[in-house]
Image (tube, rainbow, N blue to C red; front, side):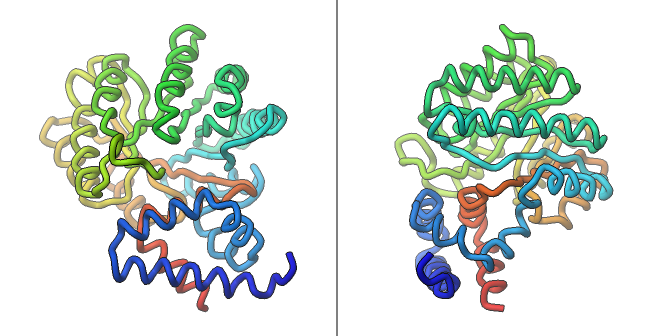
Length: 338
């Protein structure tokens, strides 16, 4: 780090430039820039070595250790909310790195049991070796899920780039059906992918435990909706399928990851029209975002779960959160200026 004093200034220039893109060209351009920055090595080095950046990012990240995550979960629980804890990290390059992440997640499950907090766990496939060898991912997930069964907990396999969907779903189903972890494992589907309608139909018929999210990776228009309005429409359509009588008959328990009040209201209205109890599904939101909406829904009898990330590998996660919601960008710039 030749000149660390310049880092906040350079970071500020990058972020202000992104803010101007939003002002001049709209959310689509901003999202494209931020998704590029989320994978740019130079940007990760720049931001990760800026103390001021971490101070602002810490609004969305519980801390660097499992103890920090447990403390955040305890606070969330005190507000009447459940939690999902996520040890940050993705796209590891060696089996040793994957094993280190696996062992940390196993320890996290132990910490949850010992502390008594109301929390489960989410994991990234590429963090446990997907890009090295799918067999390595399977083996590491098997170890993690064995501990989840021992501690009577659950693990959700997050979804990453569209090129990994088939492999991820295949490993999920093998662990769920062949290895007997059905009660302990779930998966995520992204509404912006064209294929998700077919995937949701299949998973609902299987009684799967699924989180529906919009999607936070850069995808080509050949596989994903390029327009936000189309993604929103897909999200509502998929949510209604997940709440259908057929899905409920098969024992599916849907979870909806969104901070968009329009999406939340659409789900609530559909559930009420179908006379679906408020505790038959849950809303999921990110740590540090829309806290007032989280508490409002909980007060109305809905189940709400907060996704709490922790760890030192926070940069890609943080930048994708900025890409998802422009208000987060303005919040970040305002704090950086102050």
